Length: 263
Image (cartoon, rainbow, N blue to C red; front, side, top):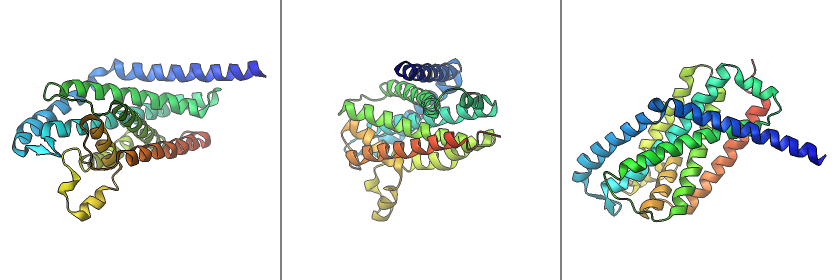
């Protein structure tokens, strides 16, 4: 009985590790499409918003404007790439019917979910690291709380990787995986305090902004780097953990039921 249990765990370990390696190799093989464009885009943000506009704005939240926007831009690159990687990869596997092969194999749904989400997290963190290194050319960063930085960026990448997975499950054509990033993630990102402090808004719009989950990710990450935040960091971390539990449960339910996977 014990030997059988160990065999099952060994199968799940090999399957999960193989999926993660496959996902990482996939986006690394096409690095000119997955890693280079975000780096160029964020460099333009640093130049236009940080240098040109930032010199006119001066300070924001008690720090110079360039330093203020850097954490938000890093977080923006992490979440968009984590989301996009899982959404495109899982939908491609679904389109090619390779997901069906995994589901009939002795691989637990949690292992499948882990493999794709881990791939998205690795890509999100890789792009985030590249953007961070680029930002050092424009400003100097001093880490206020390293554990907050690591925890928030990791939790945020997991949340959006799970979101990308759910998007891919329900997508029926390649155009469907661009709907959520275009009409949901991008607006919420720009309204999530990346370029401004919500204290500049009226009381009504400050209240509205508090319903934007990306606001908590950006500000918690900004606190870890600069020590300034518009929201309570502990509350932000609890929200991220809650999102992970909720999205993971829903994703596993979708896999177990085969929703959008079996035709």
